[in-house]
Amino acid sequence: MYAVVEIKGKQYKAQEGDLLKVDSVGGADGDVMEFDSVLMLRKDDDKVSFGTPYVKGAKVKAVVEQHGRDRKVIVYKYKRRKGYRRRNGHRQQYSLVRVKEIAATT
Image (cartoon, rainbow, N blue to C red; front, side, top):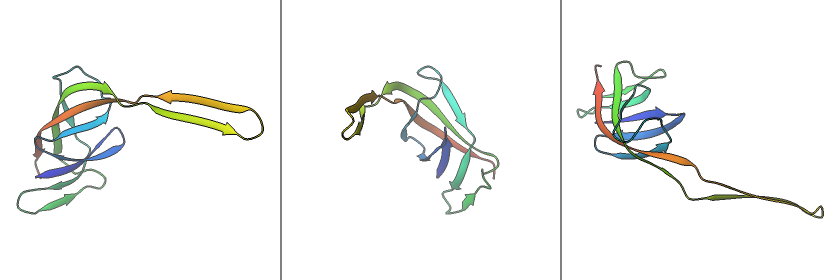
């Protein structure tokens, strides 16, 4: 069984036991989170359910394992012949989330 779940505006394929690297979600390490914005659900008997926009009664339960920061992305702006140069860096925060259970009542 797997599901396509929307977490903070991005879509992820989730199976039980998978480790997902998602944008930073609140909570401490070890917290249990439920995501009910399931877009698609495929059961073991090859039955597929698509939501409009979400599948009713489907939830993905996950545990926050750790938080971190990605590698630095350098943003460089330059305009020729003007002496304009700007250099900026950014490190995106993320959370590692382990999928524990995909629950569906449909």
